[in-house]
Length: 86
Image 1: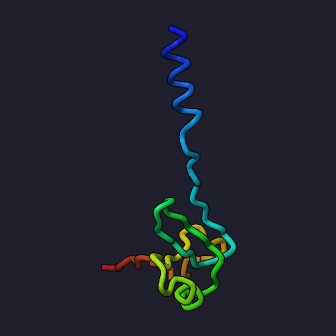
Image 2 (image 1 turned 30 degrees about the horizontal axis):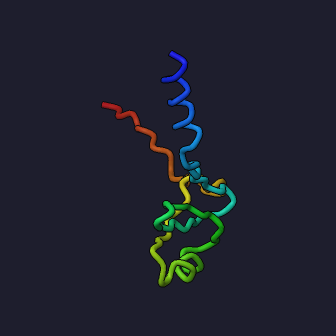
């Protein structure tokens, strides 16, 4: 029983570390890069234009940050149903 458990532990402990993709809530635009070593997301851009300049010529694309803290829901008029008088 110890040998299979030891083999599993050795396999798991020698596996390559996985990089977590993080979104920085301080920036509205992120650069997603694709590569042999894996994909990465770097949020540090204030506009899509700024990000596009960094992505130019690379295997990358600019995406909007879904976790941007400054994002606000547009305030529209509240729908209120009027009662009809018959």
